[in-house]
Length: 246
Length: 246
Image 1 (cartoon, each protein chain N blue to C red):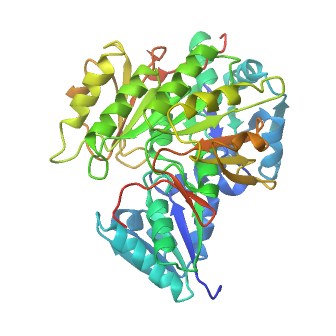
Image 2 (cartoon, rainbow over the protein chains, first blue to last red):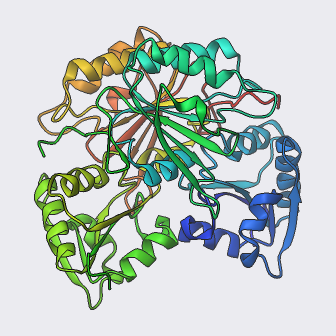
Image 3 (cartoon, each protein chain N blue to C red):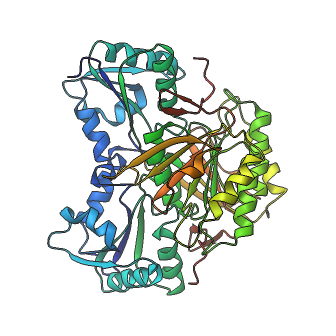
C-alpha cells in the first residue's frame, strides 16, 4: 500500500460485468474501498466481498469525488466506479479537478471503459463506421445555445451523431429541437438508432429514421445515433459504409 | 455448434490483453477459428492454443472478411479480431456489408471494445470530458475535401477533436492542413495530446499545444486529441471541464 494513497477511476463498461475490462476487474480487486452510484455498485456486487463499499445517490458527483479523495488520503487504495468510460462525461474530470484544487498528493489512474455510444452501436449494426460527433443534450452544465450550435455544426459536417442524455423528466424539448436542426441538413429518411439500457438485461433496440424517431421511447438511459448521408438500413441493421468497394 | 455458423467481430481493446472485455475473451474462447491482422493475433496469442489461427497482412480487409464468412459458412464459430472497437473504423462494417452482399445466412455478433481515443484520453488526463468529434485523416477511402469540411465544422462547433490516422508514410501533409484549419477557430495555446501506442508496452504520451504540436512525432500508431476552448493543462494532465462548480 502506497502511503500517498491511490485512486482508480474505473470504467465498468456499458452494462453488466461481461463488458468490463480485465484491467478494471484488477483495479477493483486491488482496492480496499469501492465508491459509486448505487446502480453501478449493484452491477458489480459480486466483486465486492470483503471490501468497504460506499454507494451514493445521483447528482452527488462532487461529494462522491471528495469522499474518494478523503479515503485515498488516509493511504488507502480506492476505486470510484463509473458506467461506460469515466473519461466520457464521467468521473475522471471531477476527480482530477478536485485533486488539483485540494493540492492532494494522491495518485490517480484512469481505467478506460467501453462507452455507451460504442455499446449502442454494436447492438444496432455498424452506424459509427465513419467520422462521428458525440453530444450530450443535457443543459444542466452547458448552455443550450452552445449545444444547439454543436448540433448544427455536426449536422452540417455530415458527422454521424451520437446523442447522450437525450431526454429526461422535465427536459423533453431538447431532442425535438435537435431533430429540427438536423433535418435542415439531412433527409427525413436518415436512419436513426435508439438504444435503451445498452448491453444490460433490459436492452431495447429501435431502428427508425429522422421522420419517425420521436414516436419512440427516449429517456435518460437511452443513446440516440443518427446516421450520416451514406448510412442505410439492411436486414434490420444500421450500416454506415467506410468506403471500401464491396 | 450452430449449423449456420457464427461470426464474432471482436474488439480486443487498445493495447495488450488487459484492456479486453470479459465478453471478448469469452467469444474467442468459444471460437474454433480466429482471424486477424498479424499484429493483433500476436497480442492475444496466449488465448489461441488449440485453435485454427489465420493471420493476414494489412490492407487485406476485404479478403480477410470474406475468409471469415467462408469459414463460418462451413458451420464453424469464427472470431475476427480488431484492435480497439470493431465498430469504429474497424471490421464490423465490412463484415456486415459482405454478409448482406453474399446473402449469407451466418449469424454475426459484434463485441464492442475500448477504442483508441478513449484509451489515449485516459493516458492524457480527461480531455474528452465534453462533446467531441472523431475524425480520421486518412483519405484512402474518403475525399480530402469531405474530411477538411468536417475539421472546419468540428473546430467551429468548439468540439474536442480526436484525430485517427493522423499521418503515415507518404501522407504527411493532412495533419498540417488540419492544424491550419483548427487555428482559424482556436487559440494557438489550445492543449494538444499526442499518444502513440496507447496502452501498449511502448506507449508514448506528449502534452503540447496547437502552436507546437507539429514538432513532435506523429504517425499511424498515434491518436491526436485537440482540446476545446475551455481545455487546460494542470500538473501534466489535459483537463476539459465538464462544467461542475469545483
